[in-house]
Image (cartoon, rainbow, N blue to C red; front, side, top):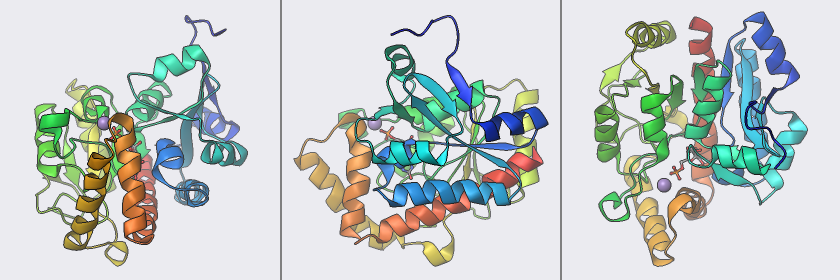
Length: 305
Ligand code: PSU
Ligand code: MN
């Protein structure tokens, strides 16, 4: 533990440093999706392809992770490869981010931790797959993702395909409303359910133009409102798995998690991986498609900002 607590251990990749100096739009990307969200080698190919989509749109990608106690904003291909293959990487959120820095650990950043690091780096736009939320059965388990509180506090726009349908979607929407987090649908009146375009619940707000989304973010800042926003971008029709089809697999995966007493941070990775097996890989194909779709929109919003 040799890191001075008074100075912030943060470094930028050459690409991100150059973009910052030039005032070029930057899009943050999380790394938990690489270490805990997708299997190898799809996690690597997806991470690198998502970065390329952002570059093609004229913005700079900044994948964020903690490597040996240092916040890295922007990773090299080698660093992504290494993260994706190691199995000793912590899954970091608000509660343990500082611990990893002080203890010199390596960890991937969840939506919450990525928002914190992006905000420190002055990045306002972030693309992911789906944010964490209120788990089904939360009235017993109390399992509510720290991502929701982070959205209430940290001024970063998170582009996501709604929330994973394995969560309790109406409870998640209720908590977001309580916390004062705008949930903005793009091209839809319905809140999307990750693998499916529809959840059966409507989206509180709607804006279809990236410019308007950027204006909403600016208006919240002007009003002095803290916190971020959710930009809910449904998976493209060609890639979706319909809701009723997914529900069978979700119920099966959750009941298996309960039987095996999976809890805490392990729940989301366990259920995602079981769903992938139950769908014979189809859920992963959809997951990859929706992340790419979110990256494209995030780049457009970052440019408009
Ligand atoms: N979206 C995905 N795959 C993931 C995640 C999101 O497509 O693996 C991760 C994100 O990092 C999110 C985390 O912050 O799952 C939520 O974990 P939990 O439910 O334990 O808070
Ligand atoms: Mn949890």
